[in-house]
Image (cartoon, rainbow, N blue to C red; front, side):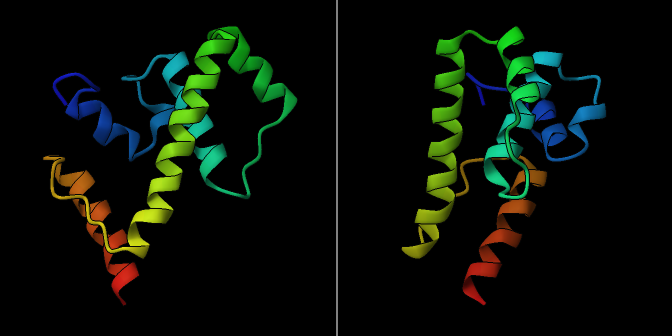
Amino acid sequence: MQNGASAEKVEAALGDYPKSPIFSPREKLALELCERMTYTNKRDTDRFFNRLKRHFTEEELVELAAIIALENFRSKFNPVFAVESQGFCPLPAVKEVAERASRRFHE
């Protein structure tokens, strides 16, 4: 995490990020986009997209959506071949979530 988010932010993102004072409005929108792209029952709406456009350029939105899509792809693709996380993330909260998810694929 030397070049990315702080450990505190990563752990907070796993919790109730909309109410967290750690995140800027722009970061909260990016996290909400992640949820909307990841969970099929949460769809993008014109109203939400207009909020995104007030905080991100078109280029930033394309890049953000591509990164989210790639991570969603990996989360579906890797378990088929039993590709594990390799333990690179040192955060206990992230490890716990990853272990729970991994167990579901091995049951």
